[in-house]
Amino acid sequence: MAAFLLGAVLLIVQPQIVPSRPAINSNAETSPQSVQRELLKKTSQKNDFKENIHSNGSCQQLPQTIIIGVRKGGTRALLEMLSLHPDIAAAENEVHFFDWEDHYRNGLQWYINQMPFSYPHQITVEKTPAYFTSPKVPERVYNMNQSMRLLLILRDPSERVLSDYTQVFYNHMQKHKPYPSIEQFLIKNGELNVDYKAINRSLYYIHMQNWLKYFPLDHIHIVDGDKLIKDPFPEIEKVERFLKLSPQINASNFYFNKTKGFYCLRDSGRERCLHESKGRAHPQVDTRLLEKLQEYFHEPNKKFFELVGRTFDWH
Image: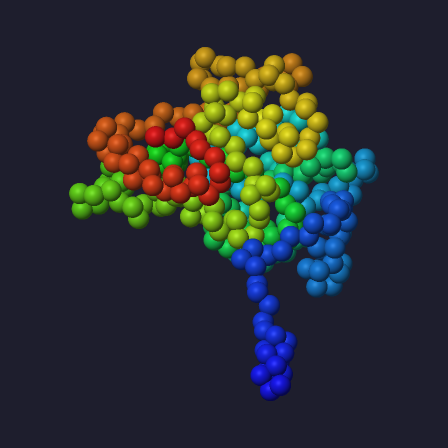
């Protein structure tokens, strides 16, 4: 009898098992406006927030979709292409709300004020490619909206490293500041410098693990950045389906610009291309060094493929 009573007590006091990822509410989706009001009520100290409603019926609202990265993966191209859809309202600049402390301290009202005016039927999108590799961002996004739809665009990790260097190199050149060669970053003591930040940003599986602690895989759509450059329309079609948008973007919205060497956009008869800073030629890298870089990424890429359940045509 004593043993029976002891077992009953142990069952009562046994702690609950905590899931590795926060539980996600499976109830019917609520409107963006109602979600926004509830979030603001929770975070506003004086409950004196304002919705910034325009006379035409549009208003500034929290994004329902965020392009979280990756840096030099094609986030600007993705945002511009997605903006062809009439049901998309895109923030023009990178907001850096979740990864910059001075911005995050300003609260959700400040975040909303950075958003474009949009109509109730539109999806508000913002993109900040630094989000993907920032350890604190996934939890912060989850705390704001656990139903967030996330877009992640990736390229061959080796190519991304070269693009990363190229951007910083040209930024220094424009300021007439000297900048070391890429070999000086990639090589340290005769070996590949794995501490180079650009290399760490390309270890996709490490950063993806952090996001999957908070969001299920079906809330994160991975865009193939290499395919988006070569043939953008099929990739944009997939994004439309993921965001549950009506199919409004067509193949005719894209045309190949032979002078620039990449696809540009055509919208209502108006043609536009990405900024001249896009598509810059990468620095010449010794073949053996490039092979060493590609070899280094072989195992991390394999882990990433297993993590997301799909493969990419990377070296």
